[in-house]
Length: 399
Image (cartoon, one colour):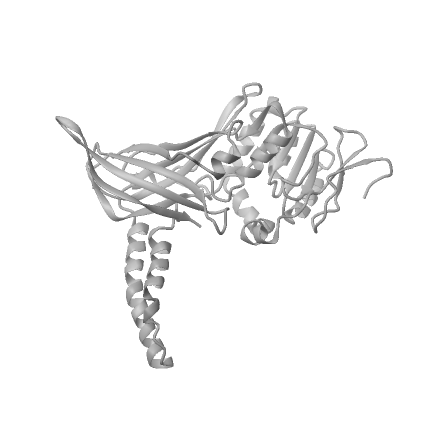
């Protein structure tokens, strides 16, 4: 593992351990791998990121990778001679950017076996003397020094799916120097009302067809196996309703799908965001969306922007924004998450759709989300107060 007389940091067990890297920040100190994720979390989340095809899907998203490239390369003052921590490094593309922007040391932490391929990539690109790839979860890796910058691509669908922001906050609290910066530094989750969207009407049609599907199934079981399944109809219809009507769907929308402009639901300044407010929200998030045209509102859409602004002590020269909003042309690999109102709302131009929402984690898998939501459509009266026209309330799921 190392030479006699050297101090070892974070000696740990697990298949991911064994790699030792020397850090120029602390002469004579070894930096070793952390612990792998537990088996359940690996199966539910981490395992996909160990495959090159999945990494390629993200790398080929030019909006994503290009925004990080611009944020780093257009702000060399934030990286030159700095120590950088890359959380969830994957192939180490962000670490490579930081090194080429002048970082003197980059710690790249990757929980999966992609770390092995990342080491090869780093060496092949001549950056082995700057980038140290550590395999293990961020929560179990120990570093020999504080860092100036934390860079990470932690965003999931609806911004918070996958709960990777937790690991970034742990890294911030444990390893970031006072006055240090996070890349990205801010993020905003938006909601927007949807007009007619074929995917939402298709979900309703599929849900309705499940009643006949069940009837056919019960008949086949009775006729073929002389077993009556009819007592289980309610359970089947409930699970199908949850899946088809109340689980979000991936979409790549254009602005014409919107019935009004998106409005901020959640605004994060990552230097101040706490684990508790993410894991145990006590107050609902709210936003108010103005309806832009007469017609039905079939549902709502969630998307996010991430911003690279540095910190007050380490401000950027050029602010960069990464947007996943509905757009014309190629979209990001995140797309947007769409949800239906069943039945749709009937709105008029100038109406206001108000949302109140708790973003919670699903109990069986905290990487996934449950949205406790209430939407109220208000109409304006020419000579009086606004009137609540319709309301939709319930839980939506992001699997």
